[in-house]
Image (cartoon, rainbow, N blue to C red; front, side, top):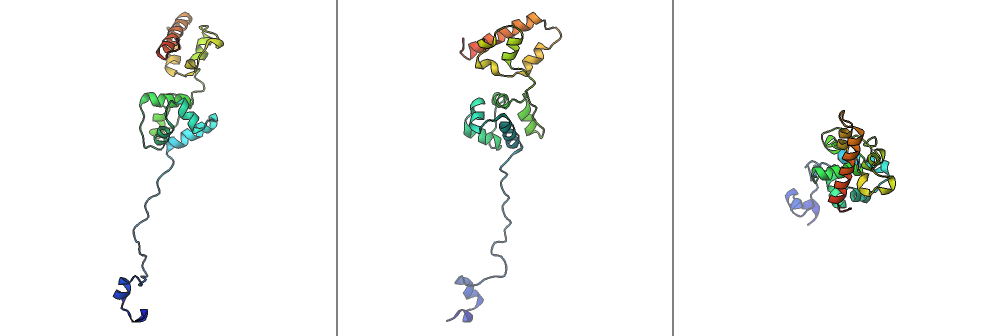
Length: 172
């Protein structure tokens, strides 16, 4: 028996029938978005700062896999974790939430580090600083800028703040 003598049904059952219609009329699945706005913003800033992803994870005190999942929107983060990542990226606090809400991050470069404030107010010398004072905290800057904050009160506050951080994080 030749193919020409088989009926269409027989040809179909033997897998020999070719339809003019495409065999798979289902729509293509949507391409998974590989870059989120947060991922794009973090990547841009990371490159500006000359950091690798593993450097950013280390500075933000998170694992590489957590950072990847968070950037891609597959994992959430606590406020403290966001703050650490914002510090690592030198963004103002709240920048990650702003990006997630459709906004833009704000650079924290104009905010001095706690160490810079300590030196500026004469509490310690640059040689006495530790890595604990490398953080930027806009809340401290706002407090120091309040109208009723005298220079002596600012120095006293910064000394207590530095001592507290060192005790909490085991540096004293």
